[in-house]
Length: 219
Image 1 (cartoon, one colour):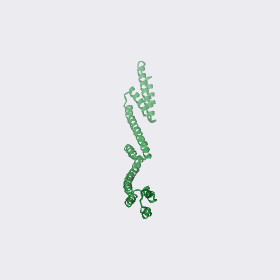
Image 2 (cartoon, rainbow, N blue to C red; image 1 turned 90 degrees about the vertical axis):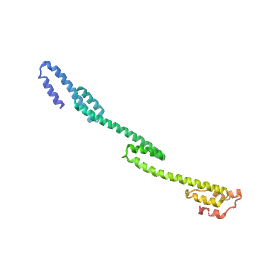
Image 3 (cartoon, helix red, strand yellow; image 1 turned 30 degrees about the horizontal axis):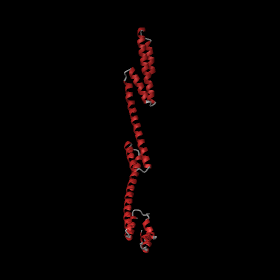
Image 4 (cartoon, rainbow, N blue to C red; image 1 turned 120 degrees about the horizontal axis):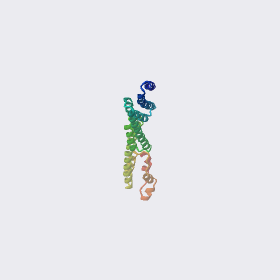
């Protein structure tokens, strides 16, 4: 409609009195500048160059107080604000995931869990943090169980070592056997040294053949 408007305006200018043509001509120029700005702004808007389009619409508004460019500015500003917000969210999510994955690969489960929770709060629909959090929960439960088992093993071995040092070999053997509930692949240097005679010779302990022969079976 810009072209039709220009044709009509030109015909009107040349049909008025000469003393009015100057003012009308300047009005035509101003209107033409306004419509050129609107046209440029519309093109930029359709190209998704929203910030540049807003600038053009504002220029047009400065020429003429029309509602169209104002409405366009309001609509495009909303899009710009939403895109900015989304970009900030994407950046925060990316940073959280990168840190979480780093801690996960380092097997730092607690630190990884904290970062994955942040990522999940930022983007609840994303599956990566959800899957990793479930996996970490299993690993943390397993790690806690392993830690408790190791503690019980260490406690049992410490008691067994004391009994062995005191020469209470039968009790020591029973305690060593108990410790195998927590660490089945463990070996005990004290028992091996005693059964091969080295400790027995040093401390004049009688080598108990039955004890040593049954050691592997019992333990």
